Amino acid sequence: MRAIRNVVQMNDFKDVNNAMEREIGLSENIKELEKVNKQLARLSLRKEELTESIISAMGHQHEGQRSYEYEVWKVEIKTPFVYSLNKKLYESGSVQLPDNFNPIKESVSYSVDKVLCDKYLAEAPKKVRDALVELIDKKPGKASVTIKERC
Image (cartoon, rainbow, N blue to C red; front, side, top):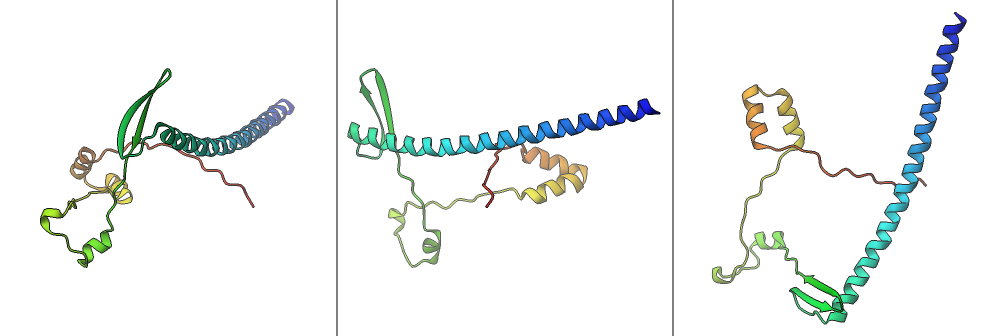
């Protein structure tokens, strides 16, 4: 009986040690990820500053892409414009464009309702599930962890 009690106590101790090690490891990982995220934010800002400086120094002043050679480097600069439509204004009809000067193309977009998709994949008849599997690819996205300091 005493030997059994000692084994149980040793196992309890082992579990406590494992839990403590996991807690310490998790805490260290969270702290390191938080530090890396701050470094990435600073580096991202610095990257933007350097990008603007190089574009200016190369005299690249137009939309598009162009390659430059400087010393041992080939520098490729891309300066695209992003076009977006004020959909509400366009659909309101208050601004009219003649057909021959209308660059706006109407398109249809499809999206998958994730909640319904998962529900139907679990509950629908086999024939429907097979059709859903054929139509919809479901694969893991990029995982992320966000760490915020507690107040």
